[in-house]
Length: 118
Image (cartoon, rainbow, N blue to C red; front, side, top):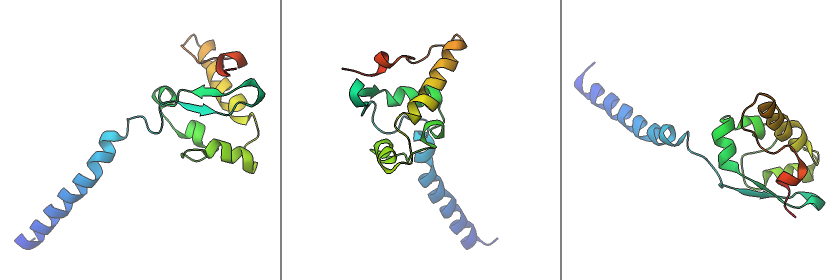
């Protein structure tokens, strides 16, 4: 390899490192809003501690497999019919909270009144 090609290769590798480094540094940082107020029907809204769930669950796709990772996506998926009214709560939230509780670990609420605020 001649000097000119070596310099170009070094420049490209340095540039790639500068572009990728921030993504690696911030990959474990919570994304989105810290807490999200979700529509909870007649029972009242649900204050969802988003960052807490990110730290505990770690894999965003556990929840976001059914809706996009953007603001308002959960409500949009319900309105379009892609998600049923209580699908996330029954099949994802409560399932996880109950499994953690059964295992003797710290878990989220497992009753309606603990999440819904009147």
